[in-house]
Structure formats: structure tokens, C-alpha cells
Length: 92
Image (cartoon, rainbow, N blue to C red; front, side, top):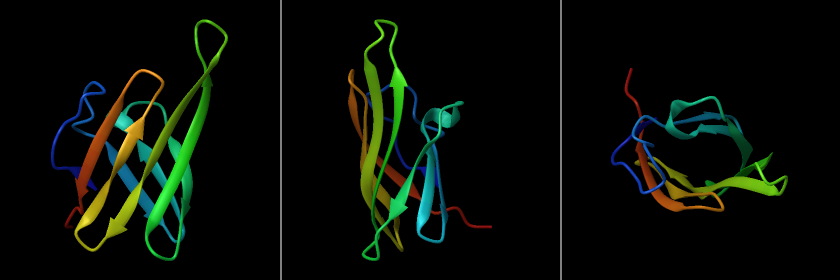
């Protein structure tokens, strides 16, 4: 999927969400971090990645939302920011 718009959590313009059956991966900003999770039968999803911050405290990254035929709408959150995301399906 390709993004429709950017966000307040830095450059998420080229983020990718990939669905395989009832599981997904989300790569914020198409960087090296990958958030994984499960997709419910209604299309809703939740995933998280637990990192350890510089201060040795947990630094969780999460993505929540829903997949529809029109794409994905959801929220990407870190301890420092929260961004609304809308990704459109790629055609190919």
C-alpha cells in the first residue's frame, strides 16, 4: 500500500503495510523497523514493536486501524508522537 498523506511523526510518506492472510507488517517511513500483528475478521488490526530507549526504558511502537477495500486507515503511535495514517492500495 502507498500513503495518501504524510504525518506529524516525521516522514511517513513512504510507509508500507503488507497483508498476508490474517497477519500484517507495517514499515513506518519504509525504514528498518517493522511492526507486525494480526488482522481480525472485520478488518481491524493491531500490532506493536517493543524497543528499549536510550534511557533503558520501554519505547513501544504501535499501529491500530482497519483495512477496507479502499485501503487502510489507522494510527501510528510512539511515546513521542501519534499520527493518523491513510494508505491506499497499490495497483499492479
